[in-house]
Every structure is written in structure tokens, then in C-alpha cells.
Amino acid sequence: MIKENDKFVSEEQLKKYAELAVRMGVNVQKNQLVVIHSDIEYVTFARLIQTAAYDAGASNVVMDWTDEQSTKEFYLHAADEAIDHYPDWENVRFKEWDDAGAAHIHIISEKPDFFKEVAPERISRFQKAYRTKLKAHYAKTRSYEVRWCLLVVPNVVWATKVFPHLRKEEALQALWQFILQGARADGKNPIKDWENHDSAFESRKKFLNNSQFKALHFTNSRGTDLFVGMPENHLYLGGGVKDKMGIPFFPNIPTEEIFSAPHKYKVNGKLVATKLLIYGGSIIDDFYLTFKDGRITDYYAATGQEALQNLIETDEGASYLGEIALVSNNSPLAQADTLFYNTLFDENTACHIGIGNASHSTLQNGSSLSEEALQEAGHNTSLLLVNVTFGTEDMKVVGMKENGNDVLLMEVGEFQF
Image 1 (cartoon, rainbow, N blue to C red):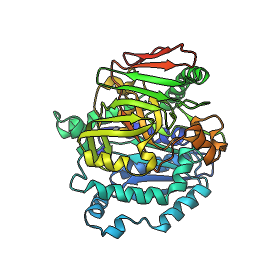
Image 2 (cartoon, rainbow, N blue to C red; image 1 turned 60 degrees about the vertical axis):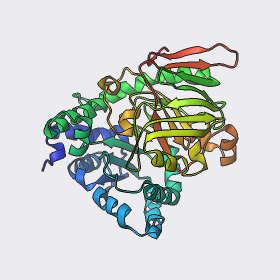
Image 3 (tube, rainbow, N blue to C red; image 1 turned 135 degrees about the horizontal axis):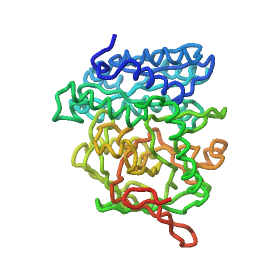
């Protein structure tokens, strides 16, 4: 049965989108365990992914259901000790899944303002509790030891927020169109389209990795003037990645970014966000961050100041960066010129930074380095990684070399290499 959220897209197109998640997103292997994480509202699409995963040879497909309304009630009414506690059995099941080599598919959506009655600090406390308890699992996902994929579906509340001038049916149809277009899932053969998309990343990654710039300098008319120092032997990633067995997959659908990890202590200047951030259900908007020797030393948000403070104070590493990403304005998402109120989509429209943990894969042989060696190399460690978009149509990026021979990497938001 086609539910309201799905009635403006054909079943055939939904099946192609589901197959994209399975075949390219996590690249399900024969006899592999698959775990699908989804809110009960998106049951129709989740079951299509389940079918596609079995068709790809999955040994078992576990449905890990959540319920956003129940989560809201928990945040509002649960006792303080419950907010600060994440049960051990949750960690046990994730460990068992990871030990079994499971692939994780996360169906995500947005409901802006859904948690506006909830105190941001309660959300922040619970997120810290579960990220602490599941630290080992998140370490495996960040290092790509575990294959995982995020992809997006719409809902009526989100659609009418993005397109307030349209009737809800028209808004839902329009958002579906943008999601499928941005995910490159609207063509006759999305699998082939993604193979072509991935190949386009390779030459730029090769150029950046060979250049080994000591720093990147970002400037635009919005007030961003940011120097991002890079560690020695850094690597840029983008498009598909590989797990520890060498199996390729795409963690994000969509993805338009080429990213690496900056040196923890070599970021200086000011960053002005150009799109809002949704963190823990709270909206953070019209904000800036100031950096001194890598640390966020000053920040302000006209909307969501408390939520921004809770984010930055999650742990010591949440005051530093774990990612810097280059994104061209010339992509299906950027050309849409739309605020999506969704971090996965909005971050893929323009350059962004990631507050928090750095991926080991952004250093040569990083996965084999000890924690001490990673720290010495300048890699940041945190319980979280939250992306902030700051790119603009007039973004300029200069690659700075040790010998003083600077290279123009981006101008008017477009790649120059």
C-alpha cells in the first residue's frame, strides 16, 4: 500500500531508489546481514529496501524501527536518570551486528520545529549518553570498517516548510522531485549514473592529494575569512569509499563533496554559516564561529544559541574541527537554489566544515595508526561530527603551499582545477 508520503512518486521509481541504497549505498554482499534503521512513518520505502536487500543476497534484513512521536514524549517527560542513561543492551546488539559484518542503511527525514517544546539540553544530554555508549560502533563507521548509508525521504511537514507557498500535495511532490534529482535517482539507470558520478571525483582527488597544500584559505562576501591548516600526508576523499575488505560503497546519498580533515590546532579566522543547522531537533540559524589555533573561541546564533552551545560543549573535541569539504555550486542540489532544512542535503550544496571527529581515512595509512600517532598528526577526536555549510556563490578558495606558490582552487563557487 502506498502511504501519503510516497503517493507522488511511482512504485517503479521508489524501487530504483531502494535498489540504489542497496547496490551502491552499502553494496550488499551475498549472505550479508543488513540492518535498516527507519521511523515507522516510512514503512513503505523501508520494506522496498528490505526486498531489494534480499534480492541482492542478504542473509537477513533486520528492521530497526523508531517512532519520532514517542521520542518526543521521552524527551519531554522521561526522568532525568533516563535522559542520561543509554541501556547496555543497545550497545550489545550493535556490537553483535558489527561483529557479524552487518551493513547499515539509515532512512532519514526532517520535521523542522518538531522538538521545539523540548529543552535543547535534554536532547544534548541523551545524545551524549548514546554516543558514549556506542563509541566503538561509531568508530567503526567513521573509519569505514562498517559499511553504511544515509538516504532521505520526504514528509508533509518538511515539504510545506521547504515550499510554504504550495499546497501540501504540491509541496510533497516538489520535494520528492528534488530529493530524487539530488540523489541522482531520477534517471532510467541510477546505478550507472552513480558509477559515472563517482569517476568524476577521481581526477580532483588525485590533484589535491598530490598537491599536499599546507593550508586552504576561504573567503567570501558574507564575512568568512578562514585559514584551514592541513596535516602532513593528508588525503582527500569523495564519492565512493572502501571498507577494510576493499568493498566500495557510498555512505551518503546524495554526495557532492571532496573532503579531508584539517589539522586540529591550525584553523584560524571566522566562518559565517550560510544555511541553518538542525541539531538534535533544534534549528540553529544566522550564526558564526571564530577559531583560534583550531579551537572555537567565540560563536553566536540569532536562533538556537543554546543548542549551538550544547553542541560545542559536548566534549573537548567538539570545540575543534574534524572535516573540511569542497563542494561546487554546479551540482543538481546547488542548482536547485533551495534551503532544504536537512543537513545531508544542504551540506552537499556548498563548502562546509565538520565540527568534531576526524576520519582516520583522511590520513595516509591512518587506519593502522595508534591513537597517539593520530593525535600527534593533528587529528581531532570527538563523540560527534556535525557539518556546517558556509559556501556561497562568490566563495574563493586558495591552496597555500610551503614554497609560497598559491593555487586558486575555487572562484565564484566553482572548481578551478
